[in-house]
Length: 230
Image (cartoon, rainbow, N blue to C red; front, side):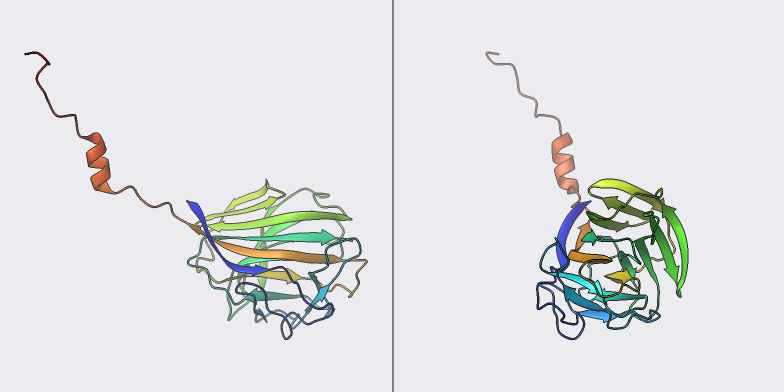
């Protein structure tokens, strides 16, 4: 399989304080909406964390929630990437894939508040089941880490800074859904909590098959020719 085109890209480059849902649009497929079943609503705003990049997003609602993007994948196999700036491990952000736009269903990863462990969960109707986890202390604050959540057929993976952290087999959520984020009840603060940046979702496509005629041609023996000089 091979990496295809990005169907979502958002660097959260905008005016600090702007609401991500009503006042911001990302570069590709970057219109955001709240997933049904989450209590966050319009809960993200553009921010500039202390010591971090100038354009990120942070929770402002004081409630938990999930948001998905308008970009549509070409199928159910894709990667969701983002940079996370952990100023403190307070109700940290996470990534979602195969998000149902009409119900609270998805594959979801996130950092557990206080412990620094990362969990991968299967969410159906708002009921979360942990299907993979790292040890405590996998993430510490302050730090900046890159997460990649992969959904590829029955395989679900989480890479952190390019290193495989979680690998599981799960078949419950099959539809492509959308890519998005989940978040806890951060207090708006450029000096605390978790900020997200450089959100991107990329199609993951099958390799093009070798045409049968090419296979036949490559396997055909060379034509017989009489020896030279005969």
